[in-house]
View 1 (cartoon, each protein chain N blue to C red):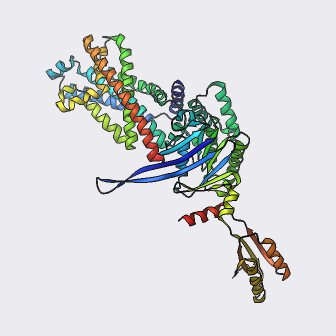
View 2: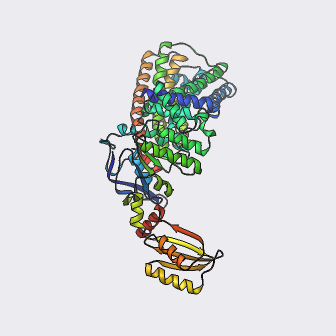
View 3: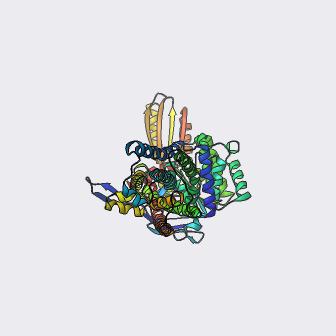
Amino acid sequence: MWIAFSATFKRQLITMRRAYPWSFFIGHILDGVYITIFAYLSYHFIFQGQLNTQFVSYTGTSDYLSYVIMGGVFNSFAVSLLMIVSRMLINEMREGTLEALLLTPSSRLGYFLGAAIQGLMRSGIEWLAIICVGLFFGLNLVAAHLALLLPIMIVLCFALFAQALVLGGFMLAFRDTYITQNTLFVIMTLVSGVSFPPQFLPDWIQGLSLIMPLYYGLELMRSVMTHAAPSSDILYHLLSLSTLGILYFAIGLLFMKRMEKSVLEKHFG
Amino acid sequence: MLEAKHLHKSYTLKEKNGWLSRRKQQIKAVNDLSLTIEKGEIIGLLGVNGAGKTTTIKMLSTLLAPTSGTISIDGINAVKQPELIKRRVNMIAGGERMLYWRLSARENLMYFGRLYGLNGNTLKQRCRALIDKVGLTEFADRPVERYSKGMKQRLQIARGLINDPDYLFLDEPTLGLDAPVARQLRVLVKSLAKEKNKGILLTSHYLEEVEELCDHVSIIEKGHLLLQGTPRRIIQTIVKDRSLIVVMKTLDKENWHWLKQETDKLGIHAQKKETNEGTRVDMKATFDMTSSFLALAQKRNLQLIRFDAKKPNLEDAIIRLTEVHD
C-alpha cells in the first residue's frame, strides 16, 4: 500500500505542478469568499446585526459572522477534498489510463490515499486563503480546545476521504461527475450547518445532516476554533464523526471495487 | 505455460424498450475457447471485429473474469489469484491510451514501475534501459502530450515491459503506425519472444504481420474457435486455389483455343479478358502452375508482358473461412 501511496502522491504532485487546476482552485476559494461576504453584507445591512434568539440557543454563540465564515471555510475544504478523491478513477477512465492502472497489482487504497494527501496540499492552501479573507470580515478565532484541533482535523479528513470513495463509486455507476458531485454538494451545504443551524430546516431534511461528515466537522471545528463548548459535546461529535467515517470507508471500498468491475465489463468489455 | 480452457464470457446488454423499461439481452463474447501459449512462442489471435479477441486478452490479463472456464499461468489460477498473475503478465494496446500525457516518458515508467513494486536503482535502471530500447532517450523528459503517435506507441511498449512480464498480450499494437515504426515494433516483438523467452499473444488486422511473426494462429469467430495451427498449415487447409495472371500484347483466337485446351487438360481454369495493357489471362488451379504455364508459353512463343503468380495468404484464408461460416 505504501508504494502505491507514494507513487500516486508523486504523480499527482508532478501533474499539479505541470498543469495546476487553477479553475477549481479559484472556484473553491470564491465559493468560500462568497459565503463570507454574503453573510457579512446581509448581517450588517439587511438584518442590522439582529439575530433570531433561536440561533443562539441552537449554536451556543451570538457570533454569527464567525459561525458563517467557519462554515464557508470548511465547506470549501470538504468540497475540494471530495472532488479530488472521488474523481480519480473516472478521470483515469476518461483519459484512457484505467486499464493500465488496473493491470498493476497495486493497492487501490494506497492509490486513493496518495491522491488524497497530495490533494490536501491544494485544499489546505484554499482553506488558508479563505480563513485570511474571513479575518477581515469578522472571523474571531479563539483557542478554546487547541489540543483537539489536530485529532479532529485528522478524523474529519478521514471521514471526508471515506465519503469521497462512496461518491466516486456513484460517479463510476452513472459515468458522470458534474451532476453527481453537485447533487451531493447542494444537499451537503444545505443540511450541514454551513450558514445556518440545521435545526431551522424541516425535521425530515434535518435527518440528512446526521450522515454528513461536514456537519460533525463543523460542530467540532467551531467548538475548538471559535467558541468553547462542553468537552462532552466534543467527544460525542468526534465519536459520531469517526463512526460515520468508518461506515463510509467500508461501504466506499466495497462499492468502489464493485463499480471498477462493472466499468470494466460495461465500458471495456 | 499459459493455459486457457473452455473460456466463456457473457455480457448482459440492457436496451431501452420504451420510456422506463429496458430489455435485457445476453451476449456471448467468448464461447468455449481454449488456447495455450508457451514461453518463447508468438500466438496470433485472429478474427473479424467483434469476434472476441479483445475480451479474450482482457480475461487473460485479469481485467475481466471469465463467466466460466479456467486460466492458469505457470500453474497459478488466474481467476483465484489475480494479484500474482498481474506480476507475470502485461498488455499493450494500439492507439494512444494507457499513458499519462502530462508526465514524461521517464515519469510514466517510474510511476508504473512503482505500482509493480519496483523501486530504487533497479527501477531507474530498468526505465533507462527500456527508454533506450524503444528509442526515446532523446525525448525521455518531454511530456507525453508533445509526442507523436509513433512515440506514444513506443512508450506503451516500454510500459508493457516495465514489470518484465513472462507473458505479453498485444492488442493491435501497430494500429495506425507508419511502416518504419511498425517494422521496428515487429523486430522488437520477435526478439522479445525468441531472445527473452516471453510468451506473446498478438491480435492484429495486419495479416502479413501475423504471418511474419506468429508461430501459431487461432482464428475465432463470435467467440468460438474455428481453427488453430501454423499460418502455413491454415492457408493450406483453407485456401486450395492458387492464381496466376498473365498479360500478353496479343493473343489470337487460334492460340487462345489451344491454350484453353491445354490448361483444361492440366486442370487449370483459364479466363481471357481484353484490357488496355493487352490480353489478360486469369488462371486458377489447386497447384503451383507456374512451370506448366511457362512451358506452354514457350511452345507457342507467347510474348508475356506481365506475369503475376499469387500465393494464397492468411488474409485469403480468413476471408474464405468467414465466408463459409456466414
